[in-house]
Amino acid sequence: MQPKQKKVILFTTPTCRWCTTAKKHLRDNGIKFKTIDITKDQKAARDCQKQGCRGVPVYLIGSQWVCGFDYEKVEKLLNL
Image (cartoon, rainbow, N blue to C red; front, side, top):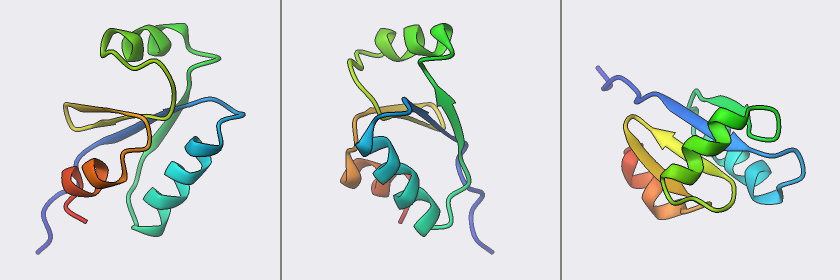
Protein backbone atom coordinates (compact mmCIF):
# COMPACT_ATOMS: atom_id res chain seq x y z
CA MET A 1 0.00 0.00 0.00
CA GLN A 2 1.36 3.40 -0.99
CA PRO A 3 1.53 6.20 1.58
CA LYS A 4 -1.13 8.88 1.29
CA GLN A 5 -0.04 11.75 -0.92
CA LYS A 6 0.56 15.05 0.85
CA LYS A 7 -1.82 17.86 -0.04
CA VAL A 8 -0.29 20.00 -2.80
CA ILE A 9 -1.25 23.56 -3.70
CA LEU A 10 0.53 25.35 -6.53
CA PHE A 11 0.38 29.16 -6.59
CA THR A 12 0.76 30.51 -10.13
CA THR A 13 0.17 33.37 -12.55
CA PRO A 14 -1.23 32.97 -16.07
CA THR A 15 1.92 34.18 -17.85
CA CYS A 16 4.55 32.27 -15.85
CA ARG A 17 6.40 29.69 -17.96
CA TRP A 18 7.90 28.05 -14.87
CA CYS A 19 4.37 27.58 -13.52
CA THR A 20 3.50 25.65 -16.69
CA THR A 21 6.62 23.51 -16.20
CA ALA A 22 5.71 22.91 -12.54
CA LYS A 23 2.16 21.79 -13.46
CA LYS A 24 3.50 19.43 -16.12
CA HIS A 25 6.03 17.97 -13.67
CA LEU A 26 3.31 17.26 -11.10
CA ARG A 27 0.93 15.77 -13.70
CA ASP A 28 3.68 13.61 -15.23
CA ASN A 29 4.28 12.11 -11.78
CA GLY A 30 0.59 11.49 -11.05
CA ILE A 31 0.47 14.10 -8.29
CA LYS A 32 -2.94 15.59 -7.56
CA PHE A 33 -2.78 19.32 -6.88
CA LYS A 34 -4.87 22.46 -6.60
CA THR A 35 -3.85 25.57 -8.53
CA ILE A 36 -4.40 29.09 -7.18
CA ASP A 37 -3.89 32.09 -9.48
CA ILE A 38 -2.36 34.78 -7.24
CA THR A 39 -3.39 37.52 -9.70
CA LYS A 40 -7.01 36.72 -8.75
CA ASP A 41 -6.49 35.86 -5.07
CA GLN A 42 -4.78 38.62 -3.11
CA LYS A 43 -4.87 36.68 0.18
CA ALA A 44 -2.98 33.82 -1.47
CA ALA A 45 -0.46 36.31 -2.87
CA ARG A 46 0.09 37.74 0.64
CA ASP A 47 0.46 34.23 2.08
CA CYS A 48 3.24 33.51 -0.44
CA GLN A 49 4.97 36.80 0.39
CA LYS A 50 4.81 36.02 4.13
CA GLN A 51 6.81 32.87 3.39
CA GLY A 52 9.51 34.96 1.70
CA CYS A 53 8.49 34.03 -1.83
CA ARG A 54 8.89 36.88 -4.31
CA GLY A 55 7.84 35.10 -7.48
CA VAL A 56 5.96 32.07 -8.76
CA PRO A 57 5.54 29.18 -8.86
CA VAL A 58 5.14 28.59 -5.14
CA TYR A 59 4.33 25.14 -3.82
CA LEU A 60 2.65 24.29 -0.55
CA ILE A 61 3.32 20.59 0.02
CA GLY A 62 1.74 19.48 3.27
CA SER A 63 2.97 22.26 5.56
CA GLN A 64 6.20 22.94 3.61
CA TRP A 65 6.53 25.98 1.36
CA VAL A 66 8.79 25.86 -1.71
CA CYS A 67 9.55 29.13 -3.49
CA GLY A 68 10.20 28.77 -7.21
CA PHE A 69 10.62 25.67 -9.37
CA ASP A 70 12.96 23.81 -7.04
CA TYR A 71 12.83 20.41 -8.76
CA GLU A 72 14.97 18.54 -6.23
CA LYS A 73 13.17 19.87 -3.16
CA VAL A 74 9.75 19.09 -4.67
CA GLU A 75 10.84 15.56 -5.62
CA LYS A 76 12.11 14.96 -2.07
CA LEU A 77 8.98 16.31 -0.37
CA LEU A 78 6.75 14.17 -2.61
CA ASN A 79 8.97 11.06 -2.37
CA LEU A 80 9.39 10.85 -6.15
